Image (cartoon, rainbow, N blue to C red; front, side, top):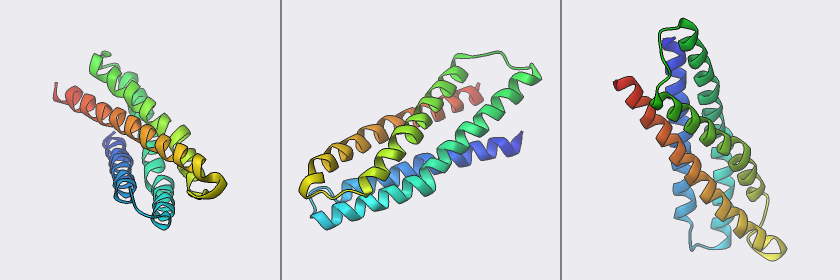
Length: 151
């Protein structure tokens, strides 16, 4: 069970740390030229594909295993903190994997100028909103897990 708990924490580290890195990349180029926007979109897509999405996936897989293991042992009664952790984690990771990742990947293929300019801006805002929501849910899940472990 310790290995699965380690994997769960490692997944959170990748998911939330990568999300923070992606956010900084996006904020750094705000107001910069076209070349910087394109580069930031590509960097964000790479961070999402290589760090954030695997981390979110690891959180889901390890969390499901830990849940089955914990309830299978029969020594834990459901608690409010556990439910908050599970729901917030699943929603946040789901947003990351099923909305954030595809949106960021699509954004990286577009240009902020020309015919795709308006779509680029729409997707850029969507990435920011979804990333913020998923990150907030991830932090809420982490807080609830700490409260659960702390008693």
